[in-house]
Length: 348
Image 1 (cartoon, rainbow, N blue to C red):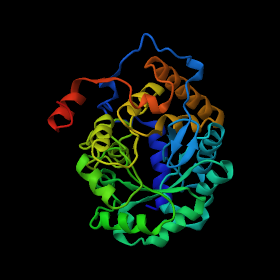
Image 2: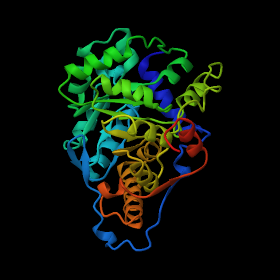
Image 3: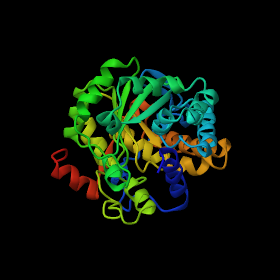
Image 4: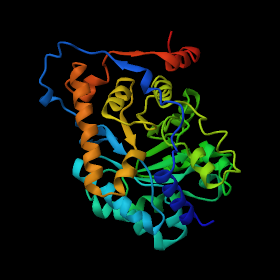
């Protein structure tokens, strides 16, 4: 099956089926301590922050979703309009299809046309570089959308569950290092639903990558997506494989000195506040915004405004007047998340 057809399959399945992990992201075990005497004005809480050096409206970005099929162009346009309105970063889906077929470039480049001022993140899979991609493909992806950064995604679970999957990841770290050294824009290494452990986070940092996006378990399961595409695959067995997002955030921020972003099951402004209190620099949201994007840009804007309001209130109720102060907010970790982090030596 062609890459563009597969991309459309993924979108239709995500919109139609229950594709989220059947275990939590871990944020359900994270409790922010209420401050009964916040000593500040909620209306003066400051959410503006820096994202890889660029000032943005809040520590939230629209995570990579789609592109690569003519029918996905409208989705990317609606997401981009919302990103421009709120001044938040936007990541596009894997650009492999457009590298294979120039007729599909506009399904991605529409993002820059609709959002001339936002921080845009290009996207390619690491496994393609292990196969035959070179630095030139990375440069083309960045040029295609005039991107401010390149995300290299890790999707081993999806590839082994996909009947057309590329499963040879040999030399991945070397390729990440090569691209990080060659490009003039930051390189973000991101997982796609299975999380990143401390040991791999350290290896990624050593490649020279600029940031890590944990892409943890708890949101969309691409093993589940591939199960719906081909129920003979191993997707069903590995539906809930991975490291929950909250766990992955703690493991990564405890190990590396580069920014760590939290995606995977982020569903509210309260989840964003919890992730920031755990040490994340920003949070990405995908599936909930995809469902709004098919309705139009205003639906996406309204959904993000809700997240913004919830984040502002949560920040206020911890007694924090800014994102920077929220990162130092008091937090308690309970349940399975605490058990996991204790077993791994990150909590006592």
